[in-house]
Every structure is written in structure tokens, then in C-alpha cells.
Length: 252
Length: 163
Image (cartoon, rainbow over all chains, first blue to last red; front, side, top):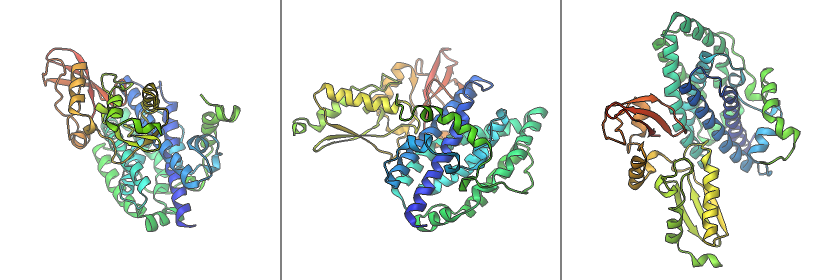
């Protein structure tokens, strides 16, 4: 794989992460337990969709075959998506969502921060825009994780279960493949090993505050980054892509 | 080309009359999202998006095209500029005054980072100026605002968040 195709694959992967997570959050619009969190979720989802659009638009330009953001979002099949498995998992209760977001955003924030200094100017610009948003999300979501963990017996029990359930999807974030390696060496992208060390110490500090136990590191699921997904993604994109698939080329 | 007939200043003045669709009291130049106007074979207006997913971005672009068309400029290109990223520090002093008069507490200058890392700042009520205010919700009617209440005059108000 050459330098240019690694950059294209990396940008597409970032876009896929943002879109799949954003779509999962959109599914919950109007279903949150209270108004403030309802607004927070919708606002945050909007940030992700916006980030996906910037990333896909850039991927289309890098690819140079005339595909635009909508083609990437609506006209690719499940196995062409390269998002993390963690992000495609179906929604559960509020504590599940908060836990998923903290686990991912701690990683994503550090990844974006490193990308602001990478060798590709456009990606660095997109990262600089996005990192400000994720910083804000993270502050909010971390507060909630601490509040739930250190809250009532019931909230503690439930959010500990969310953590135990989702933990097995966190290993994939730090599994470096050829694309990550080229990105790091040729474009000055982040070292996943360094991101992992930082993530582990950050998550530890948060979980101590939240009085939650760090799950034992056991078997980790992976495959999303290579297009091998859990059964959930297909259903999600079937709904998301319905309109473009049924009425190809529809505009509004 | 006809475009030579228009000056940069003139175009900037017209853009100064284009309202932000969500906070119409502010023009897009007050908001600090007009980064540049270039006059060449076509006229290029460089705009910086506020939030990545701000739904107003496209509305603003269309309004800019309409506004310039009204002044007889047909050949306009919009360029989206990401760098340096927009922050609330780009809002002009005039814009801050307009926000306050409109009932929205303006963001503090240079407060973006501090606000994000440390949390609560002292927000002055845009109506009575009291700093005894409390946050009702960190999120509000649009992505960029939070909801507050003044304990001095008891009025609710919105606060333009710092990013």
C-alpha cells in the first residue's frame, strides 16, 4: 500500500467512525430521559454527522473518482465500512450510551489532537475543528459517567454492567494495521501504542472517580477496521440508506 | 469581466447585512465567519463553519449567494475555510454588544479553553448585569447556546457558549 492510498483509507475510516456513531445517536433522538440530555445528544450527534461530512468530502477528493460525501454514506455496503465495532453496537439505556461515548471519545480526542500536527494539511485542519467539539463532549460525558458510577446502588450496578459489556470492543481502537503504520511513519500520524498508554491511564483515573472497577482485560473483539462487522451494522445502514437505495439519485 | 466593477469593501459591506439565520441580530461579519473576499475572474467568498454539523452553514452560503445576486453579482464561489478554526473569539466587539442587547449573554473573550476545561464561569445577566446567575441547562435551542437564569432579575436568558 502506498502513502496516498493509506491516507485515503485512514480518512475514510475516520469518516465511518463519525457517521456510524452519529447515526446511532440520531436513533435516540426524542428518546432521552430528560430534556437537557436530549439536547446534548442531538447536539453531539450533529457534530459527528458534520465531521463525517468533512471527512467524506475530503476522501472523495483524495480518491478523485467523482464520489462525494453522500456516495460514501449512502451507497456503500456494510463490508465497505471500516468503523470500529464498538460504535455500531445497538443502543441500550442511557448508561450504555454514556459509557460507549467515554470509552471512544477518550481515544478519539487523543487521536484528533495528534492529527492536528500531522503532515497532511487538510486532515490537520479537520482535526483542529473536530477536537474542539470532542473536548466539549468528553467533559459532559465524563461527568455523567462519574455521576452514574458514584450515584445510587442501581445506577452503579447498571453502568458497571455497561462497562463490562463494552470493554471487549476497546482493544480494536489500538490494533495497528498497515494503514495506521503508514499513517504514523509517512504522515506523522499518532502512534496507537502511545494513544493506548494514555487512554489506559485516563480511563483508570475516571473509573476510580466513578467508583467503577476496570474490567479485566480478556479477549478483545476486532474486525471492524478491516470491514468485518457484527450483525448489527447491516440493519443500521439498511435503515440509514433506505431512501437513497429506493430512489437512487433523489435530491431534496 | 463585470466583476471588476465591485470593490472588496463594498462586498464586505453587503455581507455585513447578511443575518445569521439562527441569531438574526448578528450579521455573518459580526459572527466572524467571513474570512476573505477575493476578486478575480469570479468573486470568492471564504466562509468558516462554526460547528462541524451546524445546520446553518448551508443556509448561510445560500443567503450570501442571494445577497450578492441582488447587487448584480452572479459569478460567486463560496469557499469553506477550516483553518484557523472558528472559535467564539472571532465574534466582533460590535457583535457582542448586539448579542447583549438582544438578550443573549455573549461569550467571554479568550475563555474557550478555560471554559471547556474548568467548567463554570461567571456569566453576567444580559438584562440587569448581575453576576448571580445559574445554569439551567448546558444545552439550548441551538448547538451554540446554553440556558441560564438570573437570580437578580429572575429572567431566563441564553448564553453563547465558548468554544
